[in-house]
Image (cartoon, rainbow, N blue to C red; front, side, top):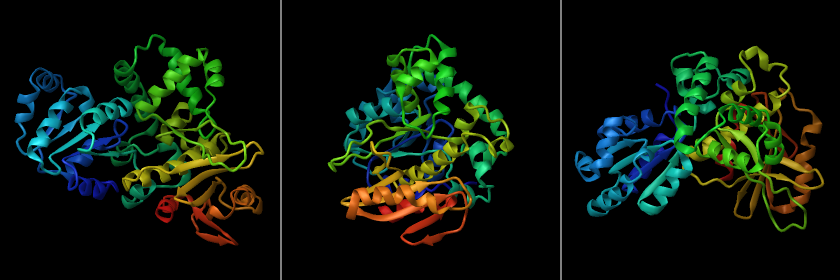
Length: 389
């Protein structure tokens, strides 16, 4: 059994709120985690047609089945239940009464904010992190991580990543897209997603992506929102400050599972990664994901950005903690050349004394100290979150 690092945070939040709402991609392990953390609670899956029909037709009767609370899976399938849950938890005033899961971020967050504001903790579970896989004794070499990604079934059941990820994407199109949008041109959407995967780690340019996909910019914007809502991609925002410089306003595009991104660009074997032209982009996606996963496993709100200005100065990650800033650059090589520090020092000089730490995450495993820069192996990238609050 793979131990999830979100578990302690989830148990802690259940002692503080009457409801805990857990979102994340399908097959990221939400149901398993909830049932492990709260084995005493009844479990109800709202994906089941009969259960969903009962909850929709008689929400009060449905909830009365659970006098001590329950785990309600895929709550976005019956959003009207949220208003009834509000009444229920206000009446009982018990901590940790209900545990909710959902796979549609925007839709669920909107419904929760309207009905359960102040009554629920909001947590997010992404696919397995490197640290979680290491705890289970799994192979976390670079090419294996880029190829297999982090969906639990690939590792727990030792499945072929190519087969599972292909099935995952097909199921996503068949099920989630029907719920989130009326998709008329399936072929164009698949092209759009594959082209987006080829742009991972790059600035999001919807006009270019739309033109290459043969769709309008308006459609591209709508489709990108759907990919975000269903936890296929996430957008890392640029950092802004009044420093008298022209900074980019476009976010950077990453996938919530690097293995899925690799599959979408046509990688069907681990050996394909050694010389693939997008290996560096995928490695950057992997490292950024590790940092994001650590933040979410600790239940923290992200203060994570990237930096880029009009003079070409840039760093891949910027941590903001009050007035303090930490900078981190990502390089896929297993050795570190002197030139790898150029961007870090240039941005440090631009931002001045607010910068407290400089780090470089690379494709090796050893921790080194180079003058004023910490050189960190990719398997330890998540430690940056602990250092920057």
